[in-house]
Image (cartoon, rainbow, N blue to C red; front, side, top):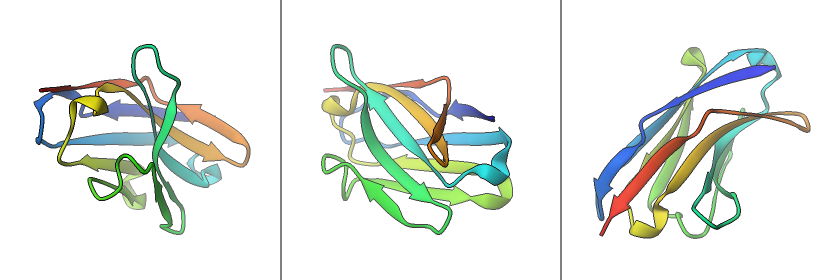
Length: 115
């Protein structure tokens, strides 16, 4: 099992930036990819961004060009740099680590963007 600890959420005005961090521990050798999902009140959880061990990235259409995902393998940490934030980005953001078909999750961090 992989344990994930997230940090970096908060309240920011529209147009601002935040950086989320996700530190992995445990069976880190089994991780194939890391990333974030988010869930807004009354909505389904959606994939925001992901990055594989090889560095391939993917993004939801709604965040392309605004969000950047990266990993520091030496620190077992993934980062989500969120720029030009919009009120519709407000949600709880959950870090994930995928090992084969298994997903492990972080505790979630609240991101609130004020208009």
